[in-house]
Length: 408
Image 1 (cartoon, one colour):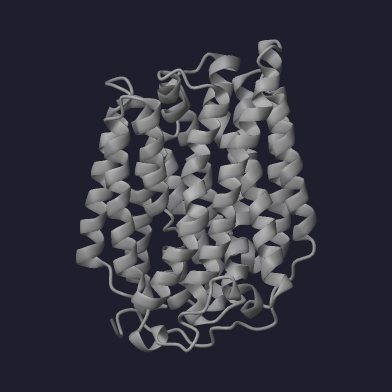
Image 2 (cartoon, helix red, strand yellow):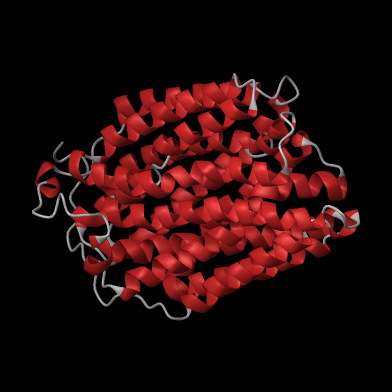
């Protein structure tokens, strides 16, 4: 693992910078859209359309990375992210904001590529731990990104998007100069290189891979309902603006870093991927159900801790299980399918949440958000039930780990 450690730390930094840019817009986008007179349902569409594009393009980018290597595909997708953020910053209408989100979704479905990179260079025993490190990079991004976005929103609502565009551009340069390729040339030239992406279900132990995908879908759909409308919920319930919400998202990020960066490896060793994923799903369910009862900041922070821990316990083990069900030349496609399921959830979640939130508009402020959050808890509970059907594969489909940089 010593040979792979340095490139993985570079990858950690790459994902961190990417997620700082993504996190910057989280507390700002719903309020930015309201300036264009967007309804809650339109905000749901605006949030979800980004993921709607990733339903199609995340598996495609994963497949391209299986064919052409992880590094070039990741660089191109990040360049597209920079362009999308820049257009969002200069948006003068809701239509242009939608167009920018669509373009960003097409190029931004790249999370399966760092995950495939990890699968290329780690052993099965280490894989969930390093998937958790990617989750920690996400957490750090959500720690600093929303806080930066909240602070910069005091300059203008466009300023956070321009800053995010600059970060994505810096990330492309970083990748070009210091990240080696992880997928050797001989691993790309497989007879099934042009096989349809859906073939991964048959290759990945059939129903077991499908079970992982379905479990991940329900986890992300429930969680996304919360993230899409958290800023609106706290604005109406507690009077928090984008600046205050930035600190709340930052708090969630700090807890995520502790869980996924410091605890996940030890917990996987102690309890295994399946048990940890089940626990995470149940904790997420309980935390979402608690949100409507939050009448003060203390209860809100308790719910945020539960959400961070629950998603942190569940997501890396599910991705680790998925990677163990396929061999090296299928990693990009397999993890792309998992993330495509997540993207589908991120599209449907805000749409469902926006529709359900409409039922709370006439209720007292103390009951605002309860319909959407209870539905989110129900979705995560379905994921928990599916999680009890999963089991760790008997053997890994990637018996050898090829040193990073051995071939490009």
